[in-house]
Amino acid sequence: MIVEQADISGSGKGPKGWFRVDRVNVMFDHPFNLPEDHALSIDFVDASAGPGARVAVELTAESGRELVKALLAAIERGERELGEVAAAS
Image (cartoon, rainbow, N blue to C red; front, side, top):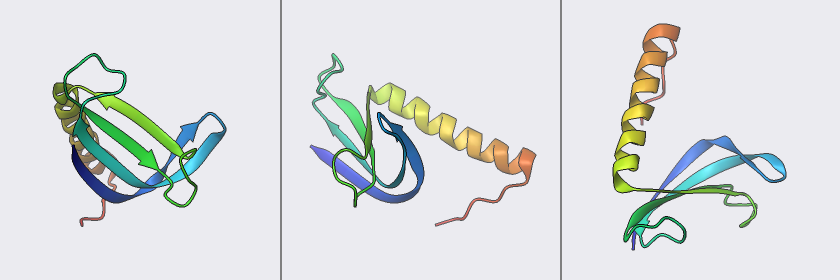
């Protein structure tokens, strides 16, 4: 299993409504539900709230690449068109 983690700032929506998310766990391993040999699993979590504060997705590797492209394109377009400046880390 390959695992990468990052501290983030955002919110996610679960069965009980919205909650804060402060960590993302990205894994490349055997999926639980996706019919693939290997896949990306992405968990957005509130680390202090336990396992109930979690939004999880499984994606194919190609879908993960497309997600990265879409995220970067949306950020760049938003900064350009809306004048927002994202904090660089």
